[in-house]
Structures are given as structure tokens and as C-alpha cells.
Image (cartoon, rainbow, N blue to C red; front, side, top):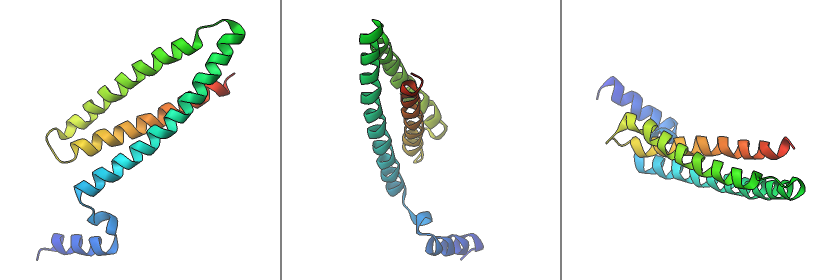
Length: 120
């Protein structure tokens, strides 16, 4: 047994997280994305409601602009994550990298949406 193999064996016993299979890491990444997406969707509802109220008070078009912005953001997020995942094109890390990117950007978007209503 090589020194590297022994080190890996010790690390996997000492830290079970290191012993995860790629399938387990993909599942974990997807679960994190689902949580982030759900949180963003809740924030989306609150922000959209707030923009509609403001539109009613000021006769504006904030809700429509927000919807257009969200659609553009979704296209951006998905395209950006394909680019980031491309570093591992065809490899086992590609899917997880794309999912982690989507999670990160979705969490960022939730904060952006929240901040839109805090500025008012």
C-alpha cells in the first residue's frame, strides 16, 4: 500500500465526509439547490407582492419590470453555470459544479430580491 493510499484511508475513517461517493455529493448538492430555490421563490412572492402594492400607490410598472428581470436572471444563471461546469466537461464533477453554481447564484438572487423591498 502506498503512502498516499494509507493517508486517504486514514482520512476517510477520520472524516466520513471525505468518503462520500460522487453520487452522494451530487445528491447533497441538489438538496442544497432545492433549499436555496425554495427560499428564493418565497422571497420572490414577497417581493412581487410589495412591487404590486407600490405600483398601485404610484401607478408604476415595477412588478412587470421585476418579472422581466427575473426571467433574464434565470437565463443568466443557467448559462453562467454551464460555463462554470464546462471546466469539467464530460467528467464526474461537471454536474455537481453546475448545481453548486446554481445554488450560489440563487442564494445571491434571494438576497437581491429581499433588498429590493428593504430600500423602500
